[in-house]
Length: 90
Picture (spheres, rainbow, N blue to C red):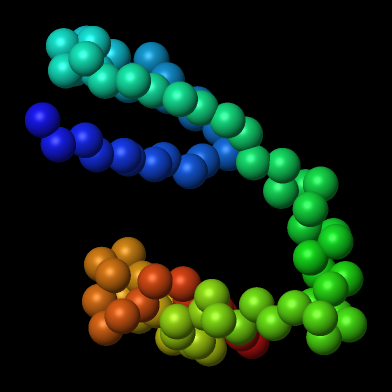
């Protein structure tokens, strides 16, 4: 049987009571979890970026003005036109 790995990244699961645990158990799935310590590392990453030691622009796939935010959000939501990460600027 082929194995697959699924990842869910989220800060908090507020609706855990809506999670289909019966389906997980019936399919004999293994769930592993961890936390991302973003608040600990974000200031350090911003310092590196400010000094030019780290260029985060590779993560941006599309840039939009705030006026185009509805269109940009729709492209991102539907993953259309290669839009994976959007940046909105005033």
